[in-house]
Length: 384
Ligand SMILES: C[S@@+](CC[C@H](N)C(=O)[O-])C[C@H]1O[C@@H](n2cnc3c(N)ncnc32)[C@H](O)[C@@H]1O
Image (cartoon, helix red, strand yellow):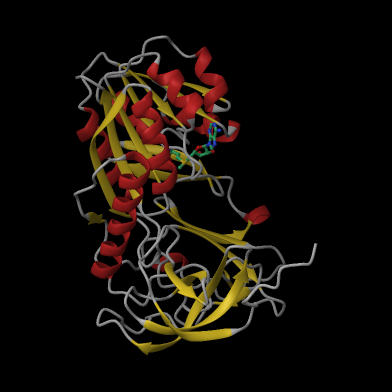
Protein backbone atom coordinates (compact mmCIF):
# COMPACT_ATOMS: atom_id res chain seq x y z
CA UNK A 1 0.00 0.00 0.00
CA UNK A 2 1.32 3.44 -0.85
CA UNK A 3 2.46 5.42 2.17
CA UNK A 4 0.20 8.33 2.97
CA UNK A 5 1.96 11.65 2.47
CA UNK A 6 1.37 13.75 5.55
CA UNK A 7 0.43 17.33 4.73
CA UNK A 8 2.69 18.76 7.45
CA UNK A 9 6.31 18.16 8.40
CA UNK A 10 8.34 18.78 11.52
CA UNK A 11 10.07 22.16 11.28
CA UNK A 12 7.58 23.53 8.74
CA UNK A 13 6.09 26.97 9.51
CA UNK A 14 2.41 27.49 8.82
CA UNK A 15 -0.02 30.32 9.27
CA UNK A 16 -1.48 32.61 10.19
CA UNK A 17 -3.48 29.96 12.05
CA UNK A 18 -6.66 30.86 13.87
CA UNK A 19 -6.25 29.58 17.43
CA UNK A 20 -9.17 27.52 18.71
CA UNK A 21 -10.23 26.52 22.22
CA UNK A 22 -7.89 25.38 24.98
CA UNK A 23 -7.57 21.62 25.48
CA UNK A 24 -6.18 19.31 28.16
CA UNK A 25 -2.39 19.46 28.03
CA UNK A 26 -2.15 23.24 27.65
CA UNK A 27 -2.41 23.49 23.89
CA UNK A 28 -5.12 25.09 21.80
CA UNK A 29 -7.02 23.09 19.20
CA UNK A 30 -6.59 24.65 15.76
CA UNK A 31 -6.96 23.50 12.17
CA UNK A 32 -4.72 23.81 9.15
CA UNK A 33 -5.38 22.30 5.75
CA UNK A 34 -7.99 19.91 7.18
CA UNK A 35 -5.67 18.71 9.95
CA UNK A 36 -5.99 19.29 13.68
CA UNK A 37 -2.94 21.12 15.04
CA UNK A 38 -2.40 21.37 18.82
CA UNK A 39 -0.69 24.72 19.36
CA UNK A 40 1.31 25.58 22.48
CA UNK A 41 2.06 29.11 23.73
CA UNK A 42 -1.11 30.44 22.10
CA UNK A 43 -4.38 31.94 23.39
CA UNK A 44 -7.84 31.13 21.98
CA UNK A 45 -8.88 33.70 19.40
CA UNK A 46 -5.35 34.71 18.35
CA UNK A 47 -3.85 34.50 14.86
CA UNK A 48 -0.37 32.98 15.06
CA UNK A 49 2.32 31.44 12.89
CA UNK A 50 3.11 27.94 14.05
CA UNK A 51 6.26 25.84 13.84
CA UNK A 52 5.35 22.18 13.57
CA UNK A 53 7.07 20.09 16.28
CA UNK A 54 5.40 16.70 15.75
CA UNK A 55 3.20 14.95 13.19
CA UNK A 56 0.93 11.97 13.85
CA UNK A 57 -1.47 10.26 11.44
CA UNK A 58 -4.45 12.35 12.52
CA UNK A 59 -3.00 15.47 14.11
CA UNK A 60 0.09 17.61 14.44
CA UNK A 61 1.69 19.55 17.26
CA UNK A 62 3.27 22.97 17.03
CA UNK A 63 4.49 26.01 18.89
CA UNK A 64 3.25 29.54 18.26
CA UNK A 65 6.43 31.30 17.10
CA UNK A 66 4.95 34.57 15.85
CA UNK A 67 1.81 36.31 17.02
CA UNK A 68 0.06 38.02 14.11
CA UNK A 69 -3.04 39.14 16.01
CA UNK A 70 -2.56 38.99 19.78
CA UNK A 71 -5.16 38.37 22.45
CA UNK A 72 -5.60 41.34 24.79
CA UNK A 73 -4.74 38.84 27.54
CA UNK A 74 -1.22 38.16 26.23
CA UNK A 75 1.80 39.40 28.22
CA UNK A 76 5.52 39.04 27.47
CA UNK A 77 6.76 35.88 29.21
CA UNK A 78 8.70 36.96 32.34
CA UNK A 79 11.22 34.14 31.80
CA UNK A 80 13.47 34.66 28.74
CA UNK A 81 13.62 30.90 27.98
CA UNK A 82 9.90 30.21 28.46
CA UNK A 83 9.34 29.50 24.75
CA UNK A 84 12.04 26.81 24.64
CA UNK A 85 11.86 25.28 28.12
CA UNK A 86 9.39 22.46 28.68
CA UNK A 87 8.63 23.57 32.23
CA UNK A 88 6.22 26.48 31.75
CA UNK A 89 3.63 26.67 28.98
CA UNK A 90 1.42 29.47 30.40
CA UNK A 91 4.00 32.22 31.00
CA UNK A 92 2.43 34.31 28.25
CA UNK A 93 -0.74 34.62 30.35
CA UNK A 94 -1.36 36.68 33.50
CA UNK A 95 -2.14 34.37 36.39
CA UNK A 96 -5.89 35.17 36.46
CA UNK A 97 -6.23 34.40 32.73
CA UNK A 98 -4.27 31.15 33.08
CA UNK A 99 -6.58 30.05 35.92
CA UNK A 100 -9.59 30.78 33.72
CA UNK A 101 -8.17 28.55 30.96
CA UNK A 102 -7.56 25.77 33.49
CA UNK A 103 -11.15 26.17 34.70
CA UNK A 104 -12.38 25.72 31.12
CA UNK A 105 -10.32 22.53 30.73
CA UNK A 106 -11.54 21.04 34.03
CA UNK A 107 -15.16 21.99 33.31
CA UNK A 108 -15.03 20.60 29.76
CA UNK A 109 -13.50 17.25 30.74
CA UNK A 110 -15.86 16.70 33.64
CA UNK A 111 -18.90 17.62 31.60
CA UNK A 112 -17.99 15.51 28.56
CA UNK A 113 -16.57 12.45 30.30
CA UNK A 114 -18.61 12.31 33.50
CA UNK A 115 -21.64 14.57 32.99
CA UNK A 116 -20.55 16.63 36.01
CA UNK A 117 -20.95 20.41 36.01
CA UNK A 118 -17.97 22.24 37.52
CA UNK A 119 -19.21 25.70 38.46
CA UNK A 120 -16.33 26.81 40.69
CA UNK A 121 -13.16 28.76 39.97
CA UNK A 122 -9.58 27.53 40.04
CA UNK A 123 -8.50 28.66 43.51
CA UNK A 124 -5.15 30.36 43.96
CA UNK A 125 -2.40 28.96 46.16
CA UNK A 126 0.04 31.82 45.70
CA UNK A 127 0.12 35.46 44.57
CA UNK A 128 1.56 35.32 41.08
CA UNK A 129 2.40 31.73 40.11
CA UNK A 130 6.15 32.15 40.75
CA UNK A 131 8.54 30.81 43.42
CA UNK A 132 6.28 27.92 44.49
CA UNK A 133 8.17 24.81 43.48
CA UNK A 134 10.15 23.04 46.21
CA UNK A 135 11.35 20.11 44.08
CA UNK A 136 13.50 20.59 40.94
CA UNK A 137 15.60 18.30 38.79
CA UNK A 138 18.19 20.16 36.71
CA UNK A 139 19.84 18.44 33.76
CA UNK A 140 23.18 19.21 32.10
CA UNK A 141 23.59 20.21 28.47
CA UNK A 142 26.63 19.09 26.42
CA UNK A 143 28.61 22.02 27.84
CA UNK A 144 27.76 21.05 31.42
CA UNK A 145 25.35 23.97 31.94
CA UNK A 146 22.37 23.20 34.17
CA UNK A 147 18.88 23.68 32.87
CA UNK A 148 15.52 22.07 32.22
CA UNK A 149 14.41 19.82 29.41
CA UNK A 150 12.63 21.19 26.36
CA UNK A 151 9.04 20.06 25.73
CA UNK A 152 8.82 16.35 24.76
CA UNK A 153 12.59 16.24 24.28
CA UNK A 154 15.86 15.34 26.00
CA UNK A 155 17.42 18.58 24.83
CA UNK A 156 18.44 20.74 27.81
CA UNK A 157 17.59 24.45 27.85
CA UNK A 158 20.15 26.20 30.10
CA UNK A 159 18.73 28.33 32.90
CA UNK A 160 18.72 32.10 32.33
CA UNK A 161 20.83 34.27 34.71
CA UNK A 162 17.82 34.93 36.96
CA UNK A 163 17.36 31.16 37.45
CA UNK A 164 14.06 29.30 37.31
CA UNK A 165 11.22 31.68 38.16
CA UNK A 166 8.79 29.03 39.41
CA UNK A 167 11.34 27.43 41.76
CA UNK A 168 11.56 28.32 45.44
CA UNK A 169 14.20 31.08 45.66
CA UNK A 170 16.51 28.77 47.64
CA UNK A 171 16.84 26.35 44.72
CA UNK A 172 16.22 28.60 41.72
CA UNK A 173 19.91 29.17 40.83
CA UNK A 174 22.02 26.02 41.11
CA UNK A 175 25.03 27.90 39.65
CA UNK A 176 27.90 25.71 38.53
CA UNK A 177 27.95 22.32 40.20
CA UNK A 178 30.65 19.89 39.09
CA UNK A 179 29.65 16.43 37.89
CA UNK A 180 27.78 14.72 35.11
CA UNK A 181 24.53 13.56 36.67
CA UNK A 182 21.31 15.59 37.00
CA UNK A 183 21.12 17.86 40.04
CA UNK A 184 18.26 17.28 42.45
CA UNK A 185 17.25 20.44 44.27
CA UNK A 186 14.89 20.41 47.24
CA UNK A 187 13.75 23.30 49.41
CA UNK A 188 12.56 21.50 52.55
CA UNK A 189 11.60 22.77 55.98
CA UNK A 190 14.92 21.36 57.26
CA UNK A 191 16.87 23.34 54.67
CA UNK A 192 17.68 23.48 50.98
CA UNK A 193 19.93 21.01 49.18
CA UNK A 194 21.21 20.95 45.60
CA UNK A 195 23.41 18.04 44.56
CA UNK A 196 23.65 14.94 42.42
CA UNK A 197 21.70 12.03 43.90
CA UNK A 198 24.80 10.31 45.37
CA UNK A 199 25.76 13.46 47.29
CA UNK A 200 22.29 14.19 48.72
CA UNK A 201 21.48 13.63 52.37
CA UNK A 202 19.31 10.50 52.54
CA UNK A 203 16.48 12.15 54.45
CA UNK A 204 14.95 15.62 54.63
CA UNK A 205 12.32 16.86 57.04
CA UNK A 206 9.10 18.65 56.19
CA UNK A 207 6.72 20.15 58.76
CA UNK A 208 2.99 20.71 58.86
CA UNK A 209 1.52 22.08 62.08
CA UNK A 210 2.83 19.98 64.94
CA UNK A 211 3.79 17.11 62.61
CA UNK A 212 7.23 16.36 61.21
CA UNK A 213 7.50 14.30 58.03
CA UNK A 214 10.73 12.63 57.06
CA UNK A 215 11.00 12.15 53.32
CA UNK A 216 13.69 10.83 50.98
CA UNK A 217 15.52 13.70 49.28
CA UNK A 218 14.42 12.32 45.90
CA UNK A 219 11.10 10.92 47.14
CA UNK A 220 7.60 12.29 46.65
CA UNK A 221 6.39 15.31 48.60
CA UNK A 222 3.80 17.80 47.30
CA UNK A 223 5.81 20.17 45.08
CA UNK A 224 3.97 23.45 45.81
CA UNK A 225 5.11 24.96 49.11
CA UNK A 226 1.49 25.67 50.12
CA UNK A 227 0.05 22.33 48.96
CA UNK A 228 0.40 20.21 52.12
CA UNK A 229 -1.60 22.69 54.22
CA UNK A 230 -4.07 23.60 51.48
CA UNK A 231 -4.84 20.00 50.46
CA UNK A 232 -5.08 18.54 53.97
CA UNK A 233 -7.41 21.38 55.02
CA UNK A 234 -9.53 20.84 51.89
CA UNK A 235 -9.69 17.06 52.39
CA UNK A 236 -10.72 17.40 56.04
CA UNK A 237 -13.32 20.06 55.17
CA UNK A 238 -14.78 17.72 52.53
CA UNK A 239 -14.76 14.50 54.58
CA UNK A 240 -15.74 15.99 57.96
CA UNK A 241 -14.17 13.08 59.86
CA UNK A 242 -15.71 12.02 63.14
CA UNK A 243 -13.46 10.64 65.89
CA UNK A 244 -13.49 6.85 65.86
CA UNK A 245 -14.17 6.48 62.13
CA UNK A 246 -12.05 4.07 60.06
CA UNK A 247 -10.20 5.71 57.20
CA UNK A 248 -7.99 4.62 54.27
CA UNK A 249 -5.22 6.81 52.80
CA UNK A 250 -4.46 5.30 49.37
CA UNK A 251 -1.37 6.28 47.34
CA UNK A 252 -0.30 7.70 50.70
CA UNK A 253 3.35 8.64 50.08
CA UNK A 254 5.01 9.38 53.43
CA UNK A 255 1.65 9.74 55.19
CA UNK A 256 0.50 13.34 54.67
CA UNK A 257 -3.27 12.67 54.66
CA UNK A 258 -2.95 9.74 57.07
CA UNK A 259 -1.53 12.14 59.67
CA UNK A 260 -4.40 14.60 59.18
CA UNK A 261 -6.96 11.80 59.60
CA UNK A 262 -5.20 10.43 62.70
CA UNK A 263 -5.17 13.94 64.17
CA UNK A 264 -8.93 14.11 63.51
CA UNK A 265 -9.39 11.00 65.68
CA UNK A 266 -9.66 8.35 62.95
CA UNK A 267 -8.15 4.87 62.82
CA UNK A 268 -6.07 4.94 59.63
CA UNK A 269 -4.70 2.40 57.15
CA UNK A 270 -2.47 3.49 54.26
CA UNK A 271 -1.20 1.89 51.04
CA UNK A 272 1.72 3.13 49.00
CA UNK A 273 3.70 1.58 46.13
CA UNK A 274 7.14 2.82 47.21
CA UNK A 275 8.53 0.62 49.99
CA UNK A 276 10.90 3.41 50.92
CA UNK A 277 8.01 5.90 51.33
CA UNK A 278 6.18 3.36 53.50
CA UNK A 279 9.20 3.10 55.81
CA UNK A 280 9.04 6.88 56.25
CA UNK A 281 5.23 6.83 56.66
CA UNK A 282 5.54 4.35 59.54
CA UNK A 283 7.97 6.68 61.29
CA UNK A 284 5.98 9.83 60.47
CA UNK A 285 2.59 8.50 61.51
CA UNK A 286 3.19 5.66 63.97
CA UNK A 287 -0.50 5.73 64.95
CA UNK A 288 -1.52 4.44 61.47
CA UNK A 289 -0.87 1.09 59.75
CA UNK A 290 0.77 1.09 56.33
CA UNK A 291 1.15 -1.48 53.56
CA UNK A 292 3.70 -1.32 50.74
CA UNK A 293 2.26 -2.49 47.43
CA UNK A 294 0.09 -1.75 44.45
CA UNK A 295 -3.17 -0.26 45.71
CA UNK A 296 -5.45 -2.45 43.55
CA UNK A 297 -3.73 -5.66 44.71
CA UNK A 298 -3.21 -4.66 48.36
CA UNK A 299 -6.72 -3.39 48.98
CA UNK A 300 -7.82 -7.02 49.50
CA UNK A 301 -5.71 -7.20 52.66
CA UNK A 302 -7.28 -4.10 54.19
CA UNK A 303 -10.16 -4.14 56.68
CA UNK A 304 -13.62 -4.75 55.23
CA UNK A 305 -14.81 -1.57 56.93
CA UNK A 306 -13.90 1.88 55.65
CA UNK A 307 -15.94 4.94 56.63
CA UNK A 308 -13.69 7.45 54.87
CA UNK A 309 -11.20 7.23 52.00
CA UNK A 310 -8.57 9.59 50.64
CA UNK A 311 -7.26 8.74 47.17
CA UNK A 312 -4.30 10.65 45.73
CA UNK A 313 -3.17 8.61 42.71
CA UNK A 314 -0.52 9.49 40.11
CA UNK A 315 -1.58 11.02 36.78
CA UNK A 316 -2.89 7.74 35.44
CA UNK A 317 -5.67 7.81 38.05
CA UNK A 318 -7.02 5.19 40.46
CA UNK A 319 -8.77 2.93 37.95
CA UNK A 320 -11.78 0.66 38.08
CA UNK A 321 -10.32 -2.14 40.24
CA UNK A 322 -9.45 0.27 43.04
CA UNK A 323 -12.78 2.07 42.85
CA UNK A 324 -14.72 -1.22 42.84
CA UNK A 325 -12.72 -2.47 45.86
CA UNK A 326 -13.65 0.69 47.71
CA UNK A 327 -17.31 0.84 46.65
CA UNK A 328 -17.86 -2.68 47.98
CA UNK A 329 -16.97 -1.35 51.47
CA UNK A 330 -19.60 1.40 51.20
CA UNK A 331 -17.56 4.24 52.76
CA UNK A 332 -19.71 7.25 53.64
CA UNK A 333 -17.32 9.63 51.82
CA UNK A 334 -14.30 9.54 49.48
CA UNK A 335 -11.97 12.48 48.86
CA UNK A 336 -10.25 12.07 45.48
CA UNK A 337 -7.17 14.34 45.08
CA UNK A 338 -6.09 14.45 41.44
CA UNK A 339 -3.28 16.05 39.44
CA UNK A 340 -4.89 15.10 36.11
CA UNK A 341 -8.45 16.20 35.34
CA UNK A 342 -8.76 13.69 32.45
CA UNK A 343 -8.13 10.59 34.58
CA UNK A 344 -10.22 12.18 37.35
CA UNK A 345 -13.18 12.63 34.99
CA UNK A 346 -12.84 9.01 33.80
CA UNK A 347 -12.68 7.73 37.39
CA UNK A 348 -15.64 9.85 38.51
CA UNK A 349 -17.70 8.38 35.66
CA UNK A 350 -16.62 4.88 36.77
CA UNK A 351 -17.50 5.69 40.38
CA UNK A 352 -20.96 6.83 39.30
CA UNK A 353 -21.49 3.39 37.75
CA UNK A 354 -20.45 1.87 41.08
CA UNK A 355 -23.01 3.91 43.03
CA UNK A 356 -20.90 6.93 44.06
CA UNK A 357 -21.85 10.45 43.00
CA UNK A 358 -19.68 13.54 43.04
CA UNK A 359 -21.18 16.17 45.31
CA UNK A 360 -18.31 18.65 45.54
CA UNK A 361 -15.51 19.61 43.22
CA UNK A 362 -12.70 22.09 43.83
CA UNK A 363 -9.70 23.01 41.67
CA UNK A 364 -6.44 24.55 42.88
CA UNK A 365 -3.70 26.35 40.99
CA UNK A 366 -0.79 24.41 42.49
CA UNK A 367 1.30 24.63 39.30
CA UNK A 368 1.50 28.34 38.43
CA UNK A 369 2.54 29.36 34.88
CA UNK A 370 1.95 25.81 33.66
CA UNK A 371 -1.23 24.17 32.34
CA UNK A 372 -1.34 21.71 35.26
CA UNK A 373 -4.10 21.88 37.84
CA UNK A 374 -4.99 19.98 41.01
CA UNK A 375 -8.57 18.92 41.76
CA UNK A 376 -10.42 17.56 44.76
CA UNK A 377 -13.67 15.65 44.35
CA UNK A 378 -15.93 14.53 47.18
CA UNK A 379 -17.93 11.37 46.46
CA UNK A 380 -20.75 9.93 48.54
CA UNK A 381 -23.05 6.92 48.00
CA UNK A 382 -25.78 7.73 45.46
CA UNK A 383 -29.14 8.24 47.11
CA UNK A 384 -27.64 9.76 50.28
C1 LIG B 1 0.49 12.06 43.92
S1 LIG B 1 1.49 11.07 44.96
C2 LIG B 1 0.64 11.28 46.48
C3 LIG B 1 1.41 10.99 47.74
C4 LIG B 1 0.79 11.46 49.04
N1 LIG B 1 -0.64 11.30 49.07
C5 LIG B 1 1.17 12.89 49.37
O1 LIG B 1 0.33 13.76 49.26
O2 LIG B 1 2.35 13.13 49.74
C6 LIG B 1 1.08 9.47 44.39
C7 LIG B 1 1.76 8.36 45.14
O3 LIG B 1 1.24 7.12 44.62
C8 LIG B 1 2.28 6.17 44.59
N2 LIG B 1 1.85 5.16 43.59
C9 LIG B 1 1.83 5.26 42.24
N3 LIG B 1 1.23 4.19 41.68
C10 LIG B 1 0.88 3.37 42.70
C11 LIG B 1 0.23 2.12 42.78
N4 LIG B 1 -0.18 1.49 41.67
N5 LIG B 1 0.01 1.58 43.99
C12 LIG B 1 0.44 2.20 45.10
N6 LIG B 1 1.04 3.41 45.11
C13 LIG B 1 1.27 3.98 43.93
C14 LIG B 1 3.52 6.96 44.26
O4 LIG B 1 4.69 6.29 44.72
C15 LIG B 1 3.26 8.28 45.01
O5 LIG B 1 3.82 8.24 46.29
